[in-house]
Image (cartoon, rainbow, N blue to C red; front, side, top):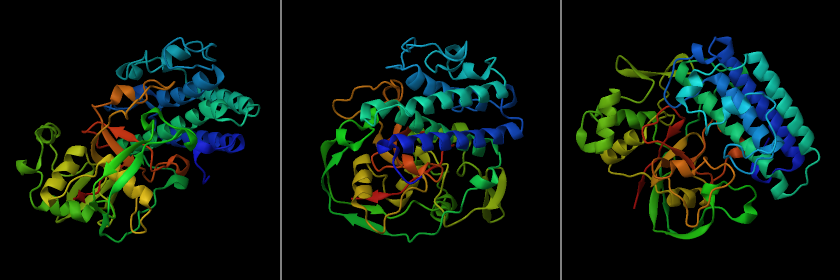
Length: 395
């Protein structure tokens, strides 16, 4: 479905919502097939949620904003009760802390799948009567974006737990791309989104003029081969390349290579969704933290791009520039744009300002309809379980 969810029509939204749910259930069944669908069967991993809770939460989110017509994510903001007697007690993230989600007495897999089906049927029925106007379609676009983002998070958990992808979702190899450097002249850009751009996340509001000085940026992400040179040169052992926080992270996690890399004589192998494969040297290095990206840049005499530089380059549409294989670290902290105010989904951005780092682009696991040069993702500096890499810059 090659369209943006931001401007999708009611008919496009209906098809995309069904497609998103089919994708969600396909990923969830990967866990169920290996007995990892319920909390007690899943090893507690920081930053991830039990798959069964994720399944219920995705449907609950759509029910909250569309069927229950909540104008805010504040508890008790919904005008109607949930289809599930204890739906809010189980799935409201504002009242159910992350660690508590592992010990909830959730309904069975079959019961939650029935709930998912009932919510989607009612959503589609209501959408069929909705006006083709931005305000009327806002909750549907929000629910679709949310399910697509949760789907990518589920794919990352499959990788973390070593679960195979189903055949129809098998990851394709990222093709080789000519490496090089692109020089940009700089200038003033409109950073952020405008009211006429369709659906806009609150952290993109609003477009404001930013001057970007001239800079040079890699045309591609740093490859496994390039990162391997950093490792071979003692990069993880040399403290001069690491920030104070980075050195602490390396020691606490006993890191000597990216997550999922394993030595094989003089070569490397890596884990991909439960499979051991020879490290594809031409592919961009993935599953690296901000600290690892910063250390590589220090070793290479380069730096990470600023958010404004990344957006400038992406919108310039230079034929040599490639993005979308992996999310990309920037050197910018995730912070609000001038005049920021929260939207209905209050906890989407605001709680993460200044503690998280701005991440741009998209990954192979990002649905096409979600991709945009304006999209602002964000991660804690130490996260290395997401499909994330980096490219370097210079003045």
